Amino acid sequence: MSTIIRTRSPFFIRTPEETSSDLDHFDITITIVSGDSTSSAQNDFAETVEISKKPIGTENSATIDISEIVSSCFSQNINSSGVSDSFRKFQSLWVTIEIQAKKSDGTNIGSSTTQTFLSQEGYNTFLEGVNDTTTKNTLITATNIQYKKGDTISIPVNTETVTSVEFFESQSTFSPEFTVNISDNANNADNKITYATASSSDLSNKDVTHIKVNLASGRETFNVEPIEECKYPVFKCSFLNRWGAYQDVYFFKKSTENLQANRENFNRSIFTTSYSYEDSGTQTVFNTYSTNEHSKKAFNTNGNENLVLNTGFVSESMNETFKELLMSEHVYLTDSSNTFPVNITDSNFIYKTSVNDRLINYTMNFEKSFSYINNVR
Image 1 (spheres, one colour):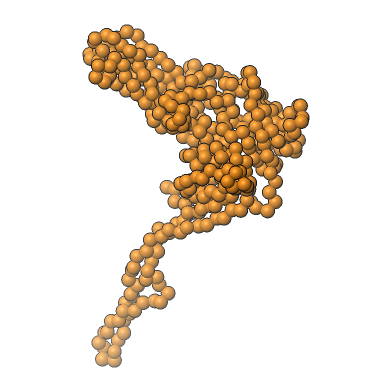
Image 2 (tube, one colour):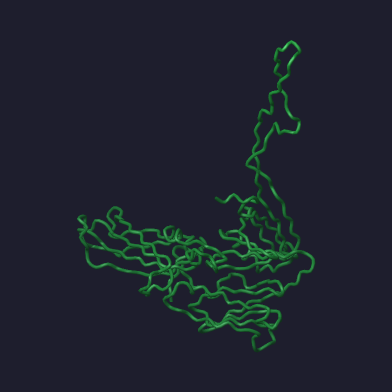
């Protein structure tokens, strides 16, 4: 079982204690690779960082936080298939730490130690403490899920612990409508997060009401609510959650979209020279201008599109989903035809409960993370 580094939170490496009086410093080599860690073939991505760290005061070991170094090696893209830069598809990377104690002249003291971790772009909370590496099986927090009828439903799972995912039409049904078997390639980081998906055709056009995620021992069950919306356009929001996996949440109800224009202005002269001749032959010069010209000229005009979306009624147990959405750094919206990156412009989130609010609906504000007029150069 791999030990997980969630790179949005600090992860501290402590060197072994070295009692030699000749100790001057530790050489720490951090090797980050994608794919199969044991393959002799070249990895799609490989990076090596070397750090020299001196112990503080009378200590005989040293500590270093490696999370920021590892985090810089990720580049998320939800539409990884067909992306020419294969670097963007990595959601998991191997991290190998080699530590060697050194004398002041660079001579080795004893032998080196090596540790290997699996890194993902998730995070831990403050209350979970330092270097929390809790194993998560199904890579979503909430146990209630909504999806649009007819859409493909997707569940991210930990390939190392999950054996299969079953999709059921009814809780009273003993056999699933569709099953996705999960297999783990122990050395390959690329398949450590697997998305178990079921399309409408996989389900024979039936709706899913619950999902069972089967483990080597035990299972996890999720309640699913299929929703059919006939009035409003539906937006699917896909975001990188706290476990470093993409999760879908839907906004079913009223949506508004606006365009905010940005421009600069300057005043310019619009005079033109006109010539007139008197009978005596003396030239007289006059200035004139066209009333159709812009004296106050706009330039660098562009705009940003913003959306205000409403979820419709959701279960109180989905509060964690919207909390993680607000904390996400990678968010995408899918409308009827396009998937595009967005940024959440809300800066606070008020938890709603059935006791206080009875029926729970969330409104969230998004900004498309690109200008309306293409200005990518």
